[in-house]
Length: 115
Length: 111
Image (tube, rainbow over the protein chains, first blue to last red):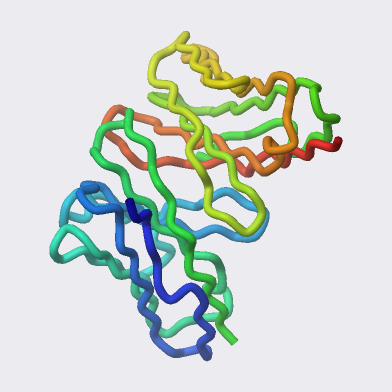
């Protein structure tokens, strides 16, 4: 079946612009996670949802970052007034079940470059 | 708090063994292991849920020492396909769901 998909795969934007990154999880997966990954580093947790409810947003760096998953499927991560330090790979992952015993399937990521 | 992985990098010849360690300063509920090849997404390897649990498939196995707050990943008779960066992700409480990943261990297997 289809895996996790993300769009766009690459995004170049000018400082100060808003960007919206989309994640389409594996069909039927309850949990959806957003991570940011710097080159050569492990994924850094941003936020996650179970169904449409945002459960933990403690990893969002500041209030310019927000995420939603209104119908419990596709999710959007929005960054307002982008800054150069926001440049990174943004990955989402989904898992079938909220329980710890279920693996997370990662998407290919969106490479964001802020100029 | 981010778990600490060691070593940061290791170079092996095909057929040699490797051990990658993951230690946390906080109590762990579960440990997840992932492998990421260059330019690709992390791929799940295994989850350890209980202290003392050991798991494995093919020639990759892992253990979880709950009391010591650490986990180890064992790669036996390494193959070229094992090359990549290995990450442990730790969950600090039951139902926390949030994974905190280590900084990674880069494994290079040479023929």
